[in-house]
Amino acid sequence: SRGAYNLACSYRDGEGGAVDKALAAKCFRMAGERGHIQGVTCYGLALMSGDGIKRDVVEGKKWLKKGADAGDELAVQQLQMHEMMAAFGGMGNGNISCSSSPGMMSFSLG
Image: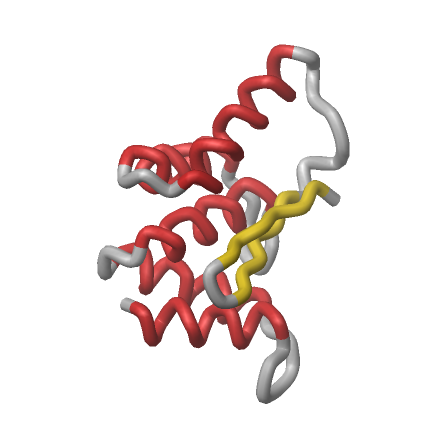
């Protein structure tokens, strides 16, 4: 699962080749299905934003909830932010992306 997650990050960031958001999303899903919690969260974020995959907010929330239930702080924050945005009628353009570096994860709203 770690290898699929690392590969997803490489595709997402263009490390070692061209950026390929579609392959990144597929690899995040593969990592998540194999139990990599950050992979679960990043796939959920890709679904929420449509980053490399068809946007599906309902499915994205399911993946984020799975990440949050496993203790991933980024997933918890994103679910809270989504609920807050929904309560206020939405903010931004809904583009949420997942980014990581050794020992750190961050997110951005586009």
